Image (cartoon, rainbow, N blue to C red):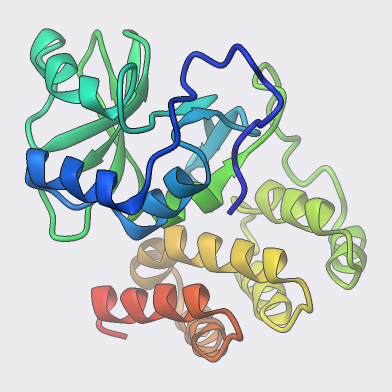
Length: 259
């Protein structure tokens, strides 16, 4: 995934290029393993400003929330090597690795579980929000929007949305998927997601996988039986996807919820 802004010469977060051996040495020094998806982006560029400015959290009946983020740390200073100091200085959680933040809020990998998930920490209140089940999911949820504005819920009719879903405009499809996440007609929405599992665009199918990954728990425990059947069909379709990453994500989802 290409996330970096490459034409910013004065980028304070862009560090010297590193190789896999340097990353391995860093992991040994902190006695942790970086997610493979994190290693991949660091091998493309060792930290820096990203093309996105926010990450979307919440969905379906939850309130839409967009958290601001514009850089990701590389290995070095300022970067991941600052994490132990930041944890001590700001009295943050233990067993985390801070990979973004400037004193008022932090994004971090939480290693309290076997698969590190991504959390957001408010510096003053110490409130912790789970953002993504994995760093790979976190990357897929990055987006760009005007942070002072919220998506207009259901700003397009279902008929307009269905026409868009049949098209090839990837960004527009993903935008409409987000705007309808909290619709009350969940069966209709899931049916559209099922339809999009067959879309020719990998980006669209990845968006579907991300939406399902974030909302499976809600669907399982809060939605009626017909919705569960559609959910299973979506997961089964994505489990056969051409993309190895999507197949792996669905495998993890099945194991997590015993599907």
